[in-house]
Length: 242
Image 1 (cartoon, rainbow, N blue to C red):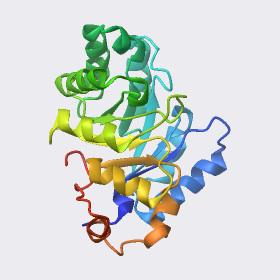
Image 2: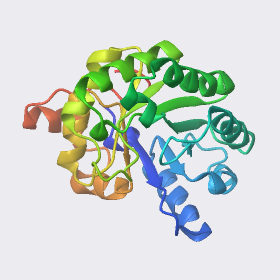
Image 3: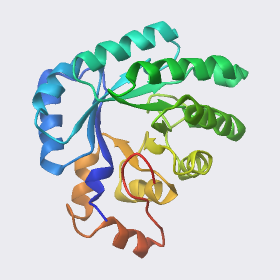
């Protein structure tokens, strides 16, 4: 099993972040071997430059944090982000449309970004699971799979309803099977938080506490599998699928 670092999208989305903060985020991502950094669109150029010749991916957010942008705007955001170096796109689904059951609109919105990103970037679709009923999560996750997304993701981390839960992660994994990755995000600050999400089926962890997660039980050792066995869990491998 790999280090927990390979599950982590090292995230900095607060509006007060400065260029110095982004440089430090990227330095940490290189040092610890995180899967990606996740930054606001204005910082994509800087992150891409800082991580050039590095295996760390550059992720940014689309339609963030509400998901209420028009599809055309989301596609334009995606195209701009990719042109400036983004290789992963965390887009927010149209949450209000999910709540009202406008499933065709939801799928078309996701599919448009997926098609714009084809061959250039992975697409992770944020469903804001804490704001949804279980059947809404099931239907929305199934649409993500049908629309060609690479990941389903629990949360923006900005919604008052809350962030990721192991129950939501497990439900997403049940729906998408091994076809898609599952990213847990929102409120994941401790090793136990992260390990519970991984045990439930997460293959990525979005957190601003990545360094703390690595340090809490040591970089590379003990491996996640050993730690999960101690806690009675079973972990999927990091990456696009379980």
